[in-house]
Image (cartoon, rainbow, N blue to C red; front, side, top):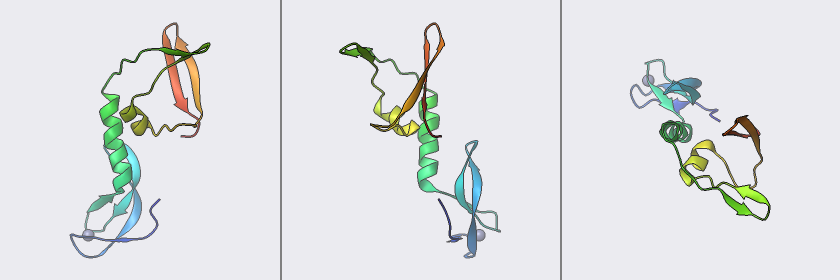
Length: 106
Ligand SMILES: [Zn+2]
């Protein structure tokens, strides 16, 4: 979360916190009156990663622990989606051969 102003490297004035569009998605950043935009680096990085994984398809093998089947989520996919061990996700059958996985809070 951005709270304070940030000194603009173009004009030297203070850029104010704002919501900015980065590759089609709104993220936090700073906007200066001179027209310069500064994006929150962590959020921008995540969007880049997200756009990268969205264009890919992953093939993984279904495993099994006792009676439950398990699917491993590739690291870059987990990072892009901000999935972490111990967090809850919702599973929903979308069709006869498709599974939708969604984080609880987004
Ligand atoms: Zn400026």
